[in-house]
Amino acid sequence: MSLRRRQLLRRSLYGAGAVGVAPLWGCTREADALPDPGRPALTKEPYLQHVAAGLRLRFETREEVAVPVVLESGGERELTPTLRSADVTYARDFLDASDIFFPDEAGVHVVQEADLGALEPGRYRWRVHADVVHEGEFLVPNPDETVRLGWLADTSWPESQQVVAMLESRMPDVFLHGGDLQYESNPFDTWTGMSQSLAPITQRAVAHMIVGNHEFEEGEEIEQMYDRLYGGQGDGPEGARYFSFRAGAARIICLDSETGGLDDTSDAQVAWFEKELARGDAATTVVAFHRPTYSLSKHYRSDTTFRDIIHSRVVDAGVPLVLCGHAHCYERFDVDGVQYVVDGGGGAVLYDPNESAAQADAERPGESALRVAVSESRGATTIDIAPDGSLSVERRRPDGVVSDQFTV
Image (cartoon, rainbow, N blue to C red; front, side, top):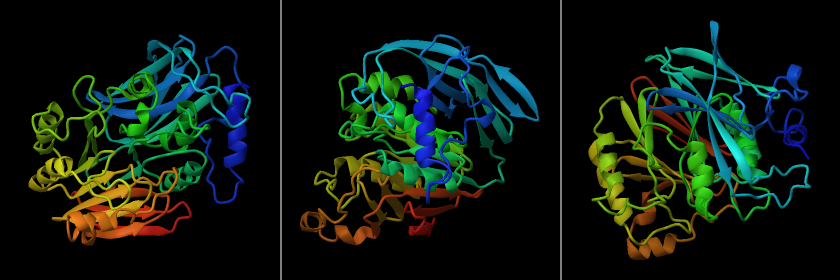
């Protein structure tokens, strides 16, 4: 079955008219719904990211034919993307007969990248003229504008669809995925399906992906899927899986908790982290990574080396907020004035957030008292970044109920 037909089927299942679920396929123009055999089809939906030189728009095809991109703000500018082809061996296609399965297929895949450059403040629209027209919008904020950042982590189909729909309804300007984009243990989770699932958000927000442990499940998955699709995002060293970018008045520093090095003060990532904390080019700083340093769930850690390295530096730098995923629940810790939000409620099987509470208090008496909010639920978190650097944080369940709310 063709990818395009699967898209239309999933749209009918989870789009307009489904109870409690927002439309998931607004990025495809109805006027162009029928495939045009003269244009390549997209196998990964378009997503916009900050890079050192400004902004870029990426998507994937199976054909080495440049797909025109149009940038719109007042006038129109047509861009021809650069092509980067790779012979991919990673594949998950054993359920190909299913109408709701989006396979990862082996063979030649082409990442197409349009360099948008550094843009003036304003609201822009983009169009990708593939077999159908995909379109979206994004904000380049003025210094006096509040910017909304959406956080989602540990996404697994189909539960992730309701969380994505809720977060999309909150209209984030910037989207940050906290890692574990899909799970090999779920036969319906694929990288192609993940791209389709996140399209309602990536069509309207600049999107960045933090690396999680489930990006390493098969031999070449990390290189052929995560690095190939998301490598070079933000501002960071060549080939690194850690990076930073600006979101309004905040600098967002995204660390790699999976490849190693954050438990060794001599590691290159720690040195880079210290330099980023000292940049001083933003009113506030938010730090984000996948594996939490504070949690009373099954992911509680007896060894505090990693935590001590992170915590001492964020306290010294005056960082007010740290975001993590990995634990499939919601927890918030207040430690020396730093708010540690653990939200891995993007769709994977939920965890008991108190599973290791007794062990934590036995090893470090009073540890559980640091936790000020908890919810055994799925959901996503939004952070409103005001021009003065103040942050308004809200966590909601898929049904819209607020799990936690605070300001810093």
